Amino acid sequence: MNNANRQAAARKKLTAFLLSFTLVGSLTAMSGPVPTKVFADEHAAAAEQPDVTDSADSPGAEVNVLPAGASDADVQAFAAAAGSHDANFSPETLQFLKANTGLDGEQWDNIMKLVNKPEQDDLNWTKYYGYCEDIGDDRGYTIGIFGATTGGPNDEGPDGPDLFKEYDRAKGASNPSVEGALKRLGINGKMKNGILVISDSKSKFVSKINSLQNDAAWREAMWRTFYNVYIKYSVEQARKRGFTSALTIGSFVDTALNQGATGDSGSLEGILSRSGSSKDEKTFMTKFYAERTKIVDTHDYNQPPNGKNRVKQWSTLLNMGETDLKDADAAIKKVTDWELK
Image 1 (cartoon, rainbow, N blue to C red):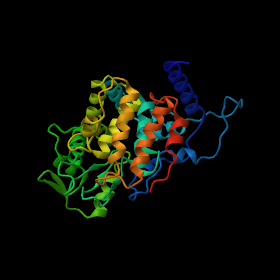
Image 2 (cartoon, rainbow, N blue to C red):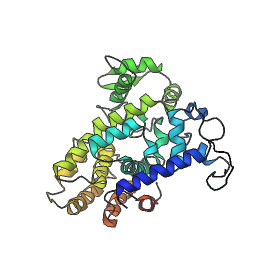
Image 3 (spheres, rainbow, N blue to C red):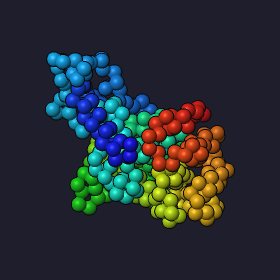
């Protein structure tokens, strides 16, 4: 079965699932604030419901559907429980990623699982849109699904300000700004020498970001910033070398967000410069992984041996032939089955 047919079949199964099952109880609590590192699982509400009978297998059984007033986030969470990769993205984000990277929802879902394992020790990456924590790395607060930072001594050019500006844009500002976003959110802070300095207490700021978990504009801003800062450069570098596979693009994105897209020898740019010029993708990427492995546990990139295991996820998938990251659920589970130190 080709990819188009597989996707069509998956959509039919998802539609049947949504028509045959009900989400019992209110889902609105999912959108509320949550404490740091303890997030409401978008899938849990559906997973914890009692079993119900599929009307197709039981003539006369009542057919239930989601409540008419269910939010987009609730619909996506319920659909995700059916196993749809696309359900983890808004339609707008899916269209944007496909147009700009050539990869679909299944491929990006798998990339994000591989990224989030060494970041949060969790494959359920969608729980972290509202993540916010000061992890003590002198980069300020770390925020969201790709770890945007507000900046500090170890990060004088943070991407957190770009995220807030994109949020202001997504909310309809004619002249988007960091200050505009902070005002919308009721956060006290200001830009100082390129760093976003938050004057609110840690608990208040963290709570404000936690509360954005299911904010559609925040999620859109998160993906636009992620693309502008890390994904765009990664895709360009892959295509420049004639590579378009999801595994290569994902490997570059993971390196960029973990070690920086451009700059010193440890950045994606630096590692690419030492990875040779082979036009054969497997040969090039084998060298790339070897070069990254040498430095991935240095310069506060990762705590050893997490960095080496992080790279091994991608290199193992390459050796398994899982370069398109399609129908790869079992392979993803296998390569992420390691202990985060």
